[in-house]
Image 1 (cartoon, rainbow, N blue to C red):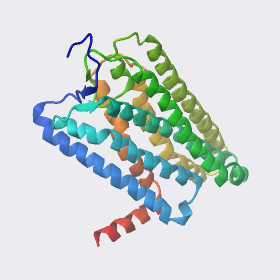
Image 2: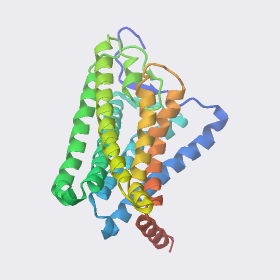
Image 3: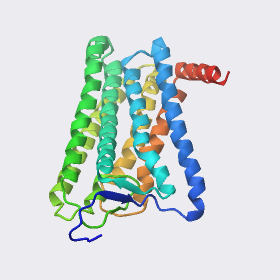
Image 4: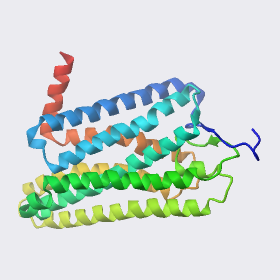
Length: 306
């Protein structure tokens, strides 16, 4: 390829660095991760739908989250598995689609975590007003707003990234199409793109985190005012699952996007965690902390095994 005149029509995903002898174990591992992510989140969606006591705003948002987890894994994992078998090529348009869906799904999860924190705040701090403040009309509006805002957010990044000219190397030093690795290949000044990208992602993540933190500060303050220890534990347990999944999602993201140009091989490992492991763990965290969900899941497993 002539680096000065040829226009890139496809990219090569280098994938994750690994010793050759670990190829088969890694393929098996990631295959199991994908299968159990699909099964776990699908079972959780069915469990919530079949349990009338779980037809609440919190679990409506959880269904949305499980669906997003399924889509997020499907946007990344099949291509990663193909990479182990040397199917490293991805068309220019395919790369743009992967970048769009990754940021769309990930940012939508970010917004959902924020709305779920607000739901817990209203339930614990404003229980008398819960039915009005979290009516089904408002809940569905929140969910629609999360999806719409995430789509616009991702579209902005995708357009900014792929309107740049790419005419040099076409090897992306990553296991999926993400903004920072792709910008490194552009044959134009990417300063504006990088600043907008970091400011946009940073502003969204920071705003969501501040709102979540504010909600939980109010919640903790309300819990401290509860007289009995058992009541405190019960109230806190209703928030524990959400707090765990928020930490699982945010800590790796902060590590990646606060040091976007480090070029460390550790970045791929951390990215694997929040793109692949977190969607696997989310249904486990929620099901293990909810007796009703566990009962329904056991019934579903028995029904399937018969």
